[in-house]
Image 1 (tube, rainbow, N blue to C red):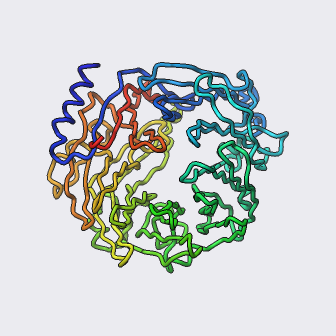
Image 2: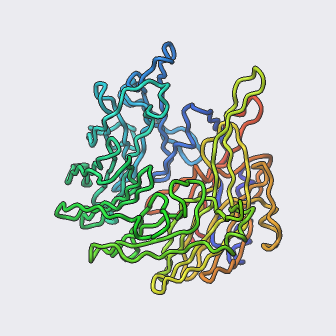
Length: 534
């Protein structure tokens, strides 16, 4: 293994003179097996101060009366474990002595003010799930005295009522740039936004309950809290309504409609990001021509909320041209009845040194299928189709938009898989370009970019690719990053880890099991990806 690591590092050192933007190093070899619906180590990891932390759920499904099981019948235990980068176990601890006191929603590890926190749900009678946070002692893994933040009403329905059976309540959190405050938000009963602002000492400083004025059930995306305490929270309804909730320092609340900013088009769920000068907040998403269609998109948009004037600015919209969508056919778009569609995606926003904005994403269709042959047990499949990596450069001053794409096509069917390794793109912003790391087939990367896209229905041959795109849409470079993996090993970008204040990405290497092991994943390395200049 030492020889493997040295060869890997030598390969990158040798290539650095050719405009390489990233370098990679490898952990020692380890063996971790994860099973579908079992406790996971790699996929639940979090990086903190050079160690990896994981949460394991010890689930109780009430098997003896499974058909009659209701939400509040399921009570789980959980424990926290600490590993080094080579996945050697350092410490593990059972929370509340391993008692099954917790709801059927996975706990979450959180960074705040150089602390490691954990958020979790407990039952309250048969009325609600109550959300708590506590600090984790990184030596003993003991929890501090928990702080209760929210009480979320939950119907005690049976497990067969799939549409109402609660397994996830999305609590979102955001940390102020100066690390002085942390914002938590959740929507109760789809209609009331609960907001709490906590200090470094985990004391509640502000608390709000805001009824949402609109039809349908809403959820919150990750919000923003500024250093002086201004709060912004995107609200997205299942019916397609998009709003921005703002709460100023004095507690004044406002709900701004975003739908009417883009006439004739329908935004996908909104995301937001604080500008580099901290004077505004960007809101952005993909756009659709057809309300309620969540498979395809026809453009992107970005607008900003001016924190000095407290108002939304005119949006910058880029509708995909027919020429652009035609060039993507078979690589992220389709043509049906002479109408062009691009697979939808949730873009990432990058603000360049020169002030330009870039929206980047990978069009993708993800669905699940169940097959059964004769008397054999049913088999669940995750079907993924990922297209080219799209980037749209937008000049904030003129509104001019320049699109570009890195051509690729990945089509895979994996047993038991529920999340896609292909949608994540790691981006490094520069003065007038972006450098990125993404997944592609080795054969596709190493052929001229104007050749037909190479694809193969297998993860075998997928490698890390590095590319640079200029603000004029020119693909400056595209090449393979790192060494090939033997066999059908792949890079699980969906499980990649980062850490606030750090500029590295940890990517696990693993493979999907086959035949009798088809519901297992086997992991053997972490790859550490960093800017080449470090």
